[in-house]
Structures are given as structure tokens and as C-alpha cells.
Length: 114
Image 1 (tube, helix red, strand yellow):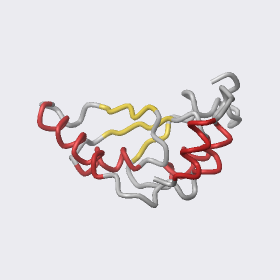
Image 2 (cartoon, one colour):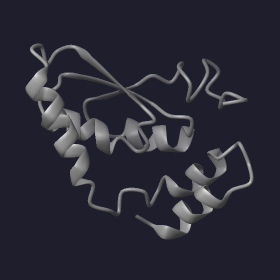
Image 3 (cartoon, rainbow, N blue to C red):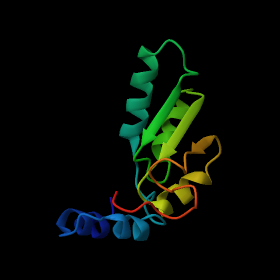
Image 4 (cartoon, one colour):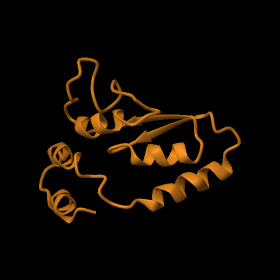
């Protein structure tokens, strides 16, 4: 992981970390996240119906949603407190961004107090 942003997040004296994640959104995926693939595959082995919706809360840029797709889940809904992270996730084929839940309100502005 990019130590710069992760270090900033862990050492923040603020309860609002959205600015850190907003800056991190464009470079977040420069790492190898094989654990996500393992988790999605493990879940798929124990679920009978892969068409059940998966809610990926805290989706970041959507790479975990892609892992669920690789495990053959059919419906992956993604949300995050960072609108910038959701914007990156929205560019990925097959992920449904739930903009009205948590990450963005119906006006398209970030929700306050998250």
C-alpha cells in the first residue's frame, strides 16, 4: 500500500477522513490485493445462489467488487464515504454504485456527518 496516504489516515486527528480518501482515490489501485480474491472465492464456495446481491460497503475504488465478479457473483452494489472513490468504482463494468446510500445523497453532494 501507499504508505504516504495510509500513514496520514492512521495518524489523523480528525473524525472526517474523507479528504484523505479523496486524494488517495486516483492512486489507490497500485497494489496487489490478492486477499480480496481469496475472500470472494471462499464466500462463493458457501453460497448456493450467486445471484444474491452483495453489498460492498466501504468499496473504495471497486477492486473488491471486481473480486466478487471474478468469483461469479452477479450483483455487486458498492458504497463508500468517499465520493471520489465511488467515482472510480463507477467506471468499472458490472458494479452498481448506490449513490443515494452513504456516499452521495440524491443531490449528488457528499453527505455530512459520516
